[in-house]
Amino acid sequence: MVDIEPMLTYDFSNFGIKQIYGAIILIYLGFIYPIYAILNYDIKTNKKVTQSMCEECVRISNCSAHKVSKKNQIMDKNILYMTNHASIGDFFIDPYVLHYSAKFIALNKIKMILPIIAAISELTSCIIFISSGNSKETILENFKKIEELRKNDDIRNVCLYPEGLRRPHRHNVSAILKKGFIYHSFDNNLPIQIVHTTNKDYVMDDMKMMLHKNTKLFTYYGPKIDPLKLKAKFEKKHKRAYTKDDYYNYVYKQWAKIWSKMDKYRIDKLRSQGLSHDECLQKMEHYSTKFPFIENTIENGDEPLSLLFLLLRSTLWSIIYFIIFKIVEKFFSVISCIYKLRCPWSTEACTSSSPSCSIASAACSWGALKYPYLNNLSFSKT
Image (cartoon, rainbow, N blue to C red):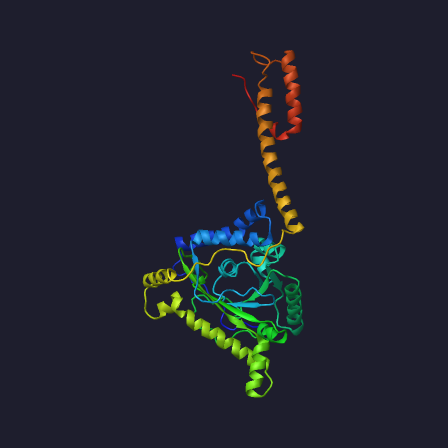
């Protein structure tokens, strides 16, 4: 499967404090906070782990999501969610707007880029990792894996990015969508719901490596696209077989239609029309007062953490406790030997003929055997 548009390029021309701050936040969200989520005993279910990481992203960026559409997210079993891919921030924002009721699809190379998040995602079943490659065998194997995991999960549907790659600050709709999953929807009679969220690339700006505060996000939940109903309606009207290309064309038209509707709430679209960044932010602030806030809630049930996750948590805590114990042990060993070497049983300087000093020397010798690093230390009695 080839990329539809040129790969994302990064702009380091104005690299400065904001970019350094953004990089630190990305490291924190990608490597440090996930460890805290693993260690947190208050988190007892799979979706709570993901929710915890998304909440931290929302807290740091102070962004807010608002529902533009009259329709809500469809929670029916076997729905395929299709959403726009704008930023690395999608992995924190899209679970939020989908109420943690979807599992996402990612390539195996993510395991090398974000190993801790990848491990958490696999243990909590919120991401399906697939192999990259264009061979027919690889593609069929990936679809087989996705279908098996989808069928066995009663509390999550599958979410995919049909654009194929991140498209930050590209305000025009993609010329085409990747057809594989749309054909898969047609062949397996899996309905689609398009979920479009604007301004995700202003929460985390991949191109400029920046984090923007107080971004307003706007989400549109599209109508249910049912291939069976479309097939019956089409064949009745046109008197010919309904093909998967006919279905793709309909899905793309709906994608483009929703994209156009959401242009009003897209910062990059307004900037392309000549508005300044501050003017765009003022408009977004105004629109946010007109639409309801999307609550950070878990829908469609949850499940307890797996035994492997609990084992990982226990192992990490064991390592932490061991490190703390060794630090405390070394500290008290140093203090103990200092007192022993100063011969606390005598008010005079220690001599070899003093019985008390003999006892102290023996004790310190035992301590030196246990803690050999103290052998080179010298102490004098004042």
